Length: 204
DNA sequence: CATAGGATCGCCT
DNA sequence: GGCGATCCTATGT
Image (tube, rainbow, N blue to C red; front, side, top):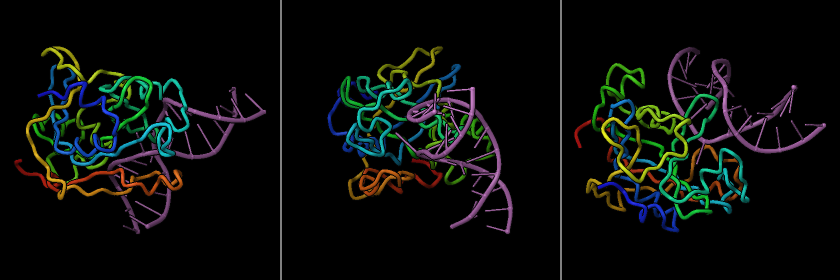
Protein backbone atom coordinates (compact mmCIF):
# COMPACT_ATOMS: atom_id res chain seq x y z
CA UNK A 1 0.00 0.00 0.00
CA UNK A 2 1.04 3.58 -0.63
CA UNK A 3 2.23 5.36 2.51
CA UNK A 4 -0.53 7.78 3.58
CA UNK A 5 -0.45 11.26 5.04
CA UNK A 6 -0.81 9.75 8.52
CA UNK A 7 2.64 8.14 8.09
CA UNK A 8 4.37 11.38 7.13
CA UNK A 9 2.54 13.80 9.43
CA UNK A 10 3.85 12.34 12.69
CA UNK A 11 6.04 14.42 14.98
CA UNK A 12 9.01 12.05 15.35
CA UNK A 13 11.14 12.46 12.22
CA UNK A 14 13.82 10.16 13.65
CA UNK A 15 11.29 7.35 14.04
CA UNK A 16 10.00 7.96 10.51
CA UNK A 17 13.56 7.78 9.14
CA UNK A 18 13.98 4.40 10.82
CA UNK A 19 10.63 3.15 9.56
CA UNK A 20 11.44 4.11 5.98
CA UNK A 21 14.10 1.38 5.96
CA UNK A 22 12.60 -1.50 3.94
CA UNK A 23 9.94 0.67 2.28
CA UNK A 24 9.80 0.82 -1.51
CA UNK A 25 10.41 4.13 -3.28
CA UNK A 26 8.69 4.31 -6.67
CA UNK A 27 8.90 6.87 -9.46
CA UNK A 28 7.06 7.21 -12.74
CA UNK A 29 8.41 9.55 -15.37
CA UNK A 30 7.49 9.52 -19.06
CA UNK A 31 5.55 6.31 -18.55
CA UNK A 32 8.54 4.49 -17.05
CA UNK A 33 7.98 3.13 -13.56
CA UNK A 34 11.03 2.25 -11.48
CA UNK A 35 11.22 1.16 -7.87
CA UNK A 36 13.79 0.37 -5.22
CA UNK A 37 14.05 -0.70 -1.58
CA UNK A 38 15.28 1.99 0.80
CA UNK A 39 18.17 0.83 2.99
CA UNK A 40 19.73 4.01 4.33
CA UNK A 41 18.11 7.25 5.54
CA UNK A 42 18.92 10.34 7.59
CA UNK A 43 16.58 12.42 9.74
CA UNK A 44 16.80 16.23 9.73
CA UNK A 45 15.07 17.55 12.80
CA UNK A 46 13.88 20.99 11.80
CA UNK A 47 14.72 24.35 13.30
CA UNK A 48 16.68 22.97 16.29
CA UNK A 49 18.98 20.80 14.13
CA UNK A 50 22.18 22.58 13.11
CA UNK A 51 22.63 20.17 10.21
CA UNK A 52 19.24 21.05 8.72
CA UNK A 53 18.76 23.58 5.94
CA UNK A 54 15.92 24.94 8.09
CA UNK A 55 18.04 25.44 11.23
CA UNK A 56 16.98 28.49 13.19
CA UNK A 57 13.79 28.79 11.16
CA UNK A 58 15.58 29.78 7.97
CA UNK A 59 13.13 30.18 5.10
CA UNK A 60 14.28 30.62 1.53
CA UNK A 61 12.77 29.75 -1.82
CA UNK A 62 14.57 26.43 -1.63
CA UNK A 63 13.81 25.45 1.98
CA UNK A 64 10.20 26.60 1.82
CA UNK A 65 9.26 23.10 0.65
CA UNK A 66 10.40 21.65 3.98
CA UNK A 67 7.81 23.74 5.83
CA UNK A 68 4.97 22.09 3.92
CA UNK A 69 2.63 19.44 5.19
CA UNK A 70 4.19 15.97 5.39
CA UNK A 71 4.23 13.83 2.26
CA UNK A 72 6.01 16.13 -0.20
CA UNK A 73 9.34 15.69 -1.99
CA UNK A 74 12.16 18.07 -1.07
CA UNK A 75 14.85 17.74 -3.73
CA UNK A 76 17.83 20.05 -3.95
CA UNK A 77 21.07 20.31 -5.86
CA UNK A 78 24.26 19.46 -4.04
CA UNK A 79 27.80 20.24 -5.22
CA UNK A 80 26.37 21.62 -8.43
CA UNK A 81 25.61 18.21 -9.88
CA UNK A 82 23.71 15.87 -7.57
CA UNK A 83 20.00 15.94 -6.84
CA UNK A 84 19.33 14.76 -3.28
CA UNK A 85 15.85 13.41 -2.54
CA UNK A 86 14.17 14.02 0.81
CA UNK A 87 10.75 13.24 2.22
CA UNK A 88 9.02 16.10 4.04
CA UNK A 89 7.45 15.05 7.35
CA UNK A 90 5.42 16.55 10.20
CA UNK A 91 2.65 19.08 9.66
CA UNK A 92 2.47 22.39 7.83
CA UNK A 93 4.94 24.88 9.28
CA UNK A 94 7.38 22.36 10.83
CA UNK A 95 10.35 21.73 8.50
CA UNK A 96 11.23 18.10 9.15
CA UNK A 97 12.74 15.94 6.41
CA UNK A 98 14.29 12.53 5.80
CA UNK A 99 17.10 12.16 3.26
CA UNK A 100 17.03 8.92 1.27
CA UNK A 101 20.67 7.83 1.16
CA UNK A 102 20.69 4.37 -0.38
CA UNK A 103 18.35 2.15 -2.39
CA UNK A 104 18.42 -1.27 -4.00
CA UNK A 105 16.83 -1.49 -7.47
CA UNK A 106 13.70 -3.59 -7.71
CA UNK A 107 11.50 -3.12 -10.79
CA UNK A 108 12.74 -1.97 -14.21
CA UNK A 109 16.36 -2.02 -13.20
CA UNK A 110 17.26 -1.83 -16.89
CA UNK A 111 15.91 1.72 -17.03
CA UNK A 112 17.72 2.60 -13.82
CA UNK A 113 21.00 1.31 -15.27
CA UNK A 114 20.51 3.59 -18.27
CA UNK A 115 20.07 6.57 -15.96
CA UNK A 116 23.18 5.61 -14.02
CA UNK A 117 25.15 4.95 -17.20
CA UNK A 118 26.15 1.51 -15.97
CA UNK A 119 26.21 -1.69 -18.02
CA UNK A 120 24.93 -3.96 -15.24
CA UNK A 121 23.86 -4.09 -11.65
CA UNK A 122 26.79 -3.94 -9.30
CA UNK A 123 27.09 -3.68 -5.55
CA UNK A 124 26.75 -0.08 -4.43
CA UNK A 125 24.79 1.00 -7.53
CA UNK A 126 22.30 2.92 -5.38
CA UNK A 127 24.50 3.52 -2.33
CA UNK A 128 24.70 7.29 -1.84
CA UNK A 129 22.00 9.98 -1.96
CA UNK A 130 23.04 11.38 -5.34
CA UNK A 131 23.11 7.92 -6.89
CA UNK A 132 19.78 6.93 -5.33
CA UNK A 133 17.94 9.93 -6.80
CA UNK A 134 19.62 9.45 -10.17
CA UNK A 135 18.55 5.81 -10.45
CA UNK A 136 14.92 6.80 -9.96
CA UNK A 137 15.17 9.74 -12.36
CA UNK A 138 14.49 12.25 -9.60
CA UNK A 139 15.76 15.77 -10.33
CA UNK A 140 15.80 18.91 -8.22
CA UNK A 141 13.15 20.34 -10.52
CA UNK A 142 10.80 17.76 -8.95
CA UNK A 143 11.03 19.46 -5.56
CA UNK A 144 7.58 20.03 -4.11
CA UNK A 145 5.85 17.06 -5.77
CA UNK A 146 3.32 15.25 -3.61
CA UNK A 147 4.09 11.68 -2.54
CA UNK A 148 0.54 11.01 -1.42
CA UNK A 149 -1.15 9.71 -4.53
CA UNK A 150 -0.23 7.26 -7.22
CA UNK A 151 -0.19 9.00 -10.60
CA UNK A 152 -2.09 7.59 -13.54
CA UNK A 153 -0.17 5.33 -15.95
CA UNK A 154 0.71 8.31 -18.15
CA UNK A 155 1.32 10.79 -15.35
CA UNK A 156 4.59 11.56 -13.61
CA UNK A 157 4.85 10.95 -9.89
CA UNK A 158 6.86 9.76 -6.92
CA UNK A 159 5.49 7.76 -4.00
CA UNK A 160 6.53 5.26 -1.33
CA UNK A 161 4.92 1.86 -0.72
CA UNK A 162 4.82 -0.49 2.22
CA UNK A 163 5.06 -3.94 0.69
CA UNK A 164 5.18 -5.76 4.00
CA UNK A 165 8.95 -5.96 4.18
CA UNK A 166 9.86 -6.20 7.86
CA UNK A 167 13.33 -5.09 8.92
CA UNK A 168 14.06 -5.99 12.53
CA UNK A 169 15.40 -3.24 14.76
CA UNK A 170 18.43 -5.41 15.40
CA UNK A 171 19.25 -5.27 11.67
CA UNK A 172 19.22 -1.46 11.60
CA UNK A 173 22.30 0.47 12.72
CA UNK A 174 21.87 4.00 14.10
CA UNK A 175 24.89 6.08 13.07
CA UNK A 176 26.03 9.71 12.85
CA UNK A 177 25.06 11.53 9.69
CA UNK A 178 27.44 12.04 6.78
CA UNK A 179 28.93 15.36 5.71
CA UNK A 180 27.56 17.50 8.53
CA UNK A 181 30.78 18.24 10.43
CA UNK A 182 29.80 21.92 10.48
CA UNK A 183 26.80 21.09 12.72
CA UNK A 184 28.74 21.11 16.00
CA UNK A 185 27.35 18.80 18.65
CA UNK A 186 24.45 17.86 16.35
CA UNK A 187 26.93 16.16 14.00
CA UNK A 188 27.21 13.28 16.46
CA UNK A 189 23.48 12.58 16.77
CA UNK A 190 22.55 9.02 15.68
CA UNK A 191 20.10 10.17 13.04
CA UNK A 192 21.34 7.94 10.22
CA UNK A 193 19.79 4.51 9.80
CA UNK A 194 21.18 1.73 7.66
CA UNK A 195 20.68 -1.98 7.19
CA UNK A 196 23.08 -4.30 5.41
CA UNK A 197 20.22 -6.52 4.25
CA UNK A 198 19.93 -4.93 0.80
CA UNK A 199 23.51 -4.04 0.01
CA UNK A 200 24.07 -7.09 -2.15
CA UNK A 201 22.59 -7.33 -5.63
CA UNK A 202 20.28 -10.33 -5.46
CA UNK A 203 16.61 -11.21 -5.23
CA UNK A 204 14.77 -10.00 -2.20
C1' DC B 1 26.56 42.10 -8.69
C1' DA B 2 30.20 38.96 -6.66
C1' DT B 3 31.55 35.29 -4.14
C1' DA B 4 32.19 31.12 -1.22
C1' DG B 5 30.80 26.76 -0.28
C1' DG B 6 27.93 22.61 -0.27
C1' DA B 7 23.28 16.60 3.46
C1' DT B 8 28.56 14.13 -3.28
C1' DC B 9 30.73 11.10 -6.69
C1' DG B 10 34.07 8.79 -9.42
C1' DC B 11 38.53 8.40 -10.78
C1' DC B 12 43.20 8.45 -9.53
C1' DT B 13 47.17 6.91 -6.74
C1' DG C 1 42.80 8.85 0.85
C1' DG C 2 42.94 12.77 -2.18
C1' DC C 3 41.12 15.71 -5.60
C1' DG C 4 38.53 17.90 -9.33
C1' DA C 5 34.04 18.42 -11.36
C1' DT C 6 30.32 21.87 -11.65
C1' DC C 7 26.50 25.24 -10.57
C1' DC C 8 22.85 26.51 -7.59
C1' DT C 9 22.00 28.88 -3.28
C1' DA C 10 22.64 32.00 0.24
C1' DT C 11 24.72 35.87 1.78
C1' DG C 12 27.00 40.18 1.58
C1' DT C 13 28.31 44.70 -0.75
